[in-house]
Amino acid sequence: MNCHEILPLIPPVARGETSLTEWALVETHLKQCSDCQAERDRLDRERHSLLNPIWSRTLSISGSAMASMTPGARLSWRWAKRRRS
Image (cartoon, rainbow, N blue to C red; front, side, top):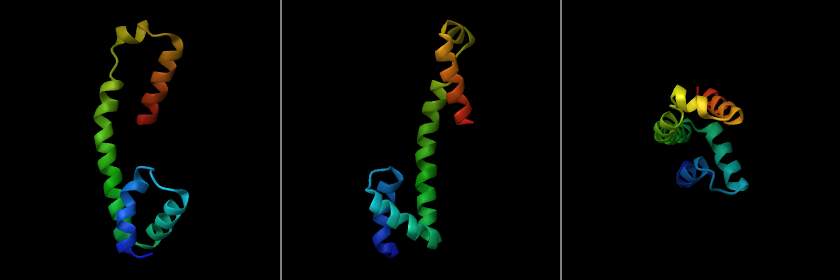
């Protein structure tokens, strides 16, 4: 496949909305084409920049709120915070 055919598939592949076959075709092309790879990288950065403010608000828990959590909830929160870093 060429860039003209791959470019429309990059956004749905980045969002995980394609079949395994389409994903494999795009990934094979991306290994060989730096221009299309750059487009996917741009989309990934854009998606992550949109998600980071949500995580920042979610993971900003005060000490008193942390103290009121159950041990399991504290562990889950710490795990999520570590994964973000």
